[in-house]
Amino acid sequence: MAKKSAIEKNKTRRLKVARDAEKRARLKAMSKDESLSQEERFNARLKLATLPRDGSATRVRNRCEITGRPRGYYRKLKMSRIALRELSSAGQIPGMTKSSW
Image 1 (cartoon, one colour):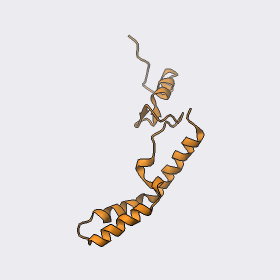
Image 2 (cartoon, helix red, strand yellow; image 1 turned 120 degrees about the vertical axis):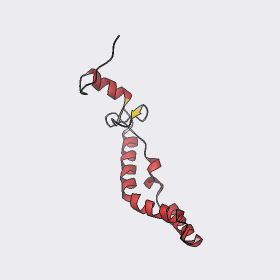
Image 3 (cartoon, one colour; image 1 turned 60 degrees about the vertical axis):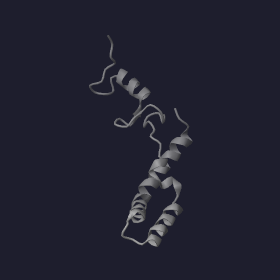
Image 4 (cartoon, one colour; image 1 turned 180 degrees about the vertical axis):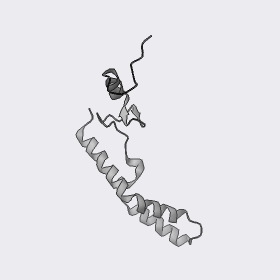
C-alpha cells in the first residue's frame, strides 16, 4: 500500500489538471500559432510558464485504484499487476482465471 500522502497528492494533481486543461491548451495553441506575431506568441509562453506546475498532465502519476501502487500499472484496468492477480484468483474479475499447465 502506498503512502496516503502520495495518493492524495496525486488526486489533487488530477483535479488541478482538469481545472487548468482548457486554459493550458489555449495558451499552447497560441504559442504555436504562426499567424500571430512573435510578441503575442512569446507572451502566451510567459503566461503558460506562470501557471502552476501541478496543472500539467505530465505531473500526474498512474496509480492503482485499489492499492495506490505506482508501478506495474495496467491503464485499461486502472490497477496494478498485483491487485489484478489477487482479484482474478479470488474470481472477482469476470472471464479471468489463473493459468496453469
